[in-house]
Image (cartoon, helix red, strand yellow):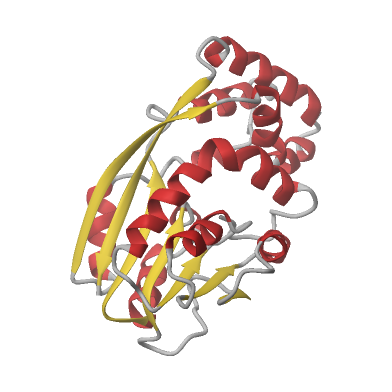
Length: 266
């Protein structure tokens, strides 16, 4: 996932290699299997980021199925293209999810992993999704539940905030701050979809490399730039975060995750 130009420099690499195995890979497989159940002829993916879901979609769908993987951020999508350059029937495109450059009724299915939370105009994004889907088409997307169900994110936020007396970096409030299933369902219906279902998906994710994960939690998103802009030292933040993560998860070597998966039908 990425929806802005802040995912630049080495951010895509840390996002893909450091955050992907812990946060995103399991849910990418889950999302892709849900899309595949509907046997679409073509699929549009929004906020594809470094191609974690794209790769899972390619594995879950028959080879002739066309996949259009889109993102607003070119450096993130470049990693996806490099990973999947030998895979057939994948088209990569720089796209704003709120202004899709496709004709009405183009796609059978759509997918978006952990991107909705970042769209400034969520209703417009749902309206655009509905517009480009064919009648009877499915839009499968997920969002994180709160910090309570994903405690690593609260640990990250509180640890980082501890370095600043005022105006701490607030990035982690965004991806984990949009999870009211009723509110989201209502907005999806306002966007034009006729039916919406949701399901909570829990996962216990292994933490094989706590040091790498801790560094990626700072370097794999805009947090590093937020720390620097406030005069902080990102490496000191990483060291403190690693200590906090080892204290919390060192004996278990895993962390709980929870997300909500939605399936909307046009």
